Image 1 (tube, one colour):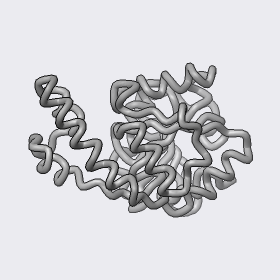
Image 2: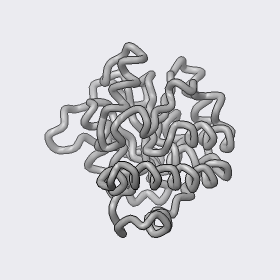
Image 3: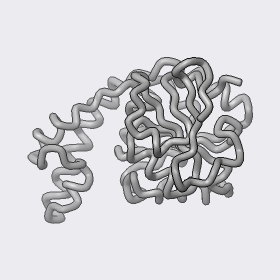
Image 4: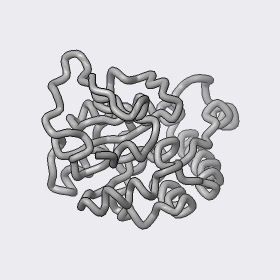
Length: 216
């Protein structure tokens, strides 16, 4: 384990995982989670589950998938409307824009992988002032691929970019982000402003500030 800048940066290799060959911050293909990573967290998942009539504590998309097709479609439309309201109020995570600008200056390419809809993800990016960094085609949501922790969305982006997993890194604030990256073979970064790092064993890098991604 290597730590720099106090709590801000921890590099580690989980048991049984091959050591990352290329340092995480030198990789040129970056796949970000959106809510809670590039934007301030606003989702009340328990509240959403209650409003949608879904079981408490169960992942929302997986619970919807078990409904009858008509009920699933109706519940998904309701979820889309609720999430749109949240997307329109999105605010950037501190340091998000400068971090993306610094990576872009290095020639890096960006994608979004979210469990939200792609339309709402684009609204979120615009509301947070981050849309300029992401091509709409590189914003992958639940319509296109199986949701995280599936690695399908990551694989889709890597194929589209004609690159490979060792050239890429996934950044997120939740276990599913890290599991998806691990399954796809990319490097993984856990972002946690509280520096609790609950899922550190799934991460190659743990940060409590987005600026840590572009520090030398």
